[in-house]
Image (tube, rainbow, N blue to C red; front, side):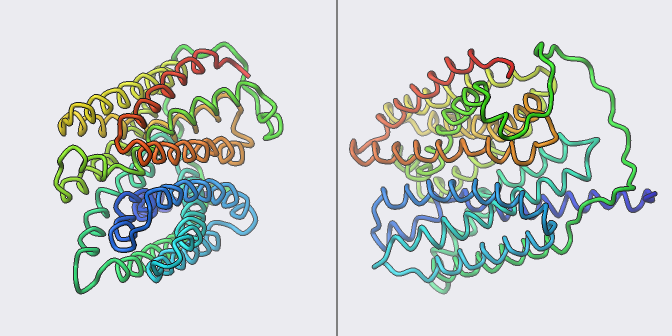
Length: 407
């Protein structure tokens, strides 16, 4: 039997996990990290937008394969592998030259994206295994760390880019080394609880009105055969697409309504903060009000976010744009928590790790929509057309939402 002091070590694991997720989340600071390639290399917006799409694809694939690898060799070696991949990815990105833009897809998207995807899955599953009685708290803290990374690291990275003694190349190399060290240390520190550990009993919760179906454990094959899964998958992809699109051009969007570059960088961080807040709030709402209300609230929030930002770009209003970014962050932050809760409640917990990683592939669809949003931006020369499209998609998601029923 584990002693109380040993059990209390789980809080150190949670702190370590949040710290690790904080550095892993830098991948989402793309609207800041792409600046040198746009300003110094003159690479096109389409090339840079497609890199973010590929990054999300490899992030999802990394999370999927990370769950499989971790089962075979454990979290320690898996996290060390992820650290090596991320380190090589960011360092080699810092060594790129202007002549071969497509190498960015290998260094940043393939290597760094896959590595961070692996670490994301392993850190969440490992830390959460210590908190069967406080899954909401543990998941919320980890997701918050991942979500606020852009705010805490974005301004530092931007300052390093502008420092004449460092510059963007050395900044990328330094970033790669630091993130690699953090992930490797996480592999050394984090471990799964032993089988004989006794956790505190979970507190009884007030009953909420649940959907009238009997849950069971679906295999991955059974889940993929369920029409309900594909409807929910489409819904989540459309909702996530709004946030993915805005994240890919957030800094340029704010500058387009006359924000100073320094303020624009800070507001990208604010977007990430609301992303983190959205992840925590969604978990609380899901626990209190259930699946239907949570998905409907997220959908309506996304519609308001896209609509308000559309008005902001048409009226050239910085205050409205800021509010739109905050709402978009909340909306985008609701997606991973909602996806996790939906997968567990509809398809059970026995095959959750694999089922959840596949459900998360909605990010890939959303990322390709984000690429199309950037294409619209380039072809029309403004943000009106992209946000009209995103608003239509959010309204379309509402129609799909009402059709989601028991599997």
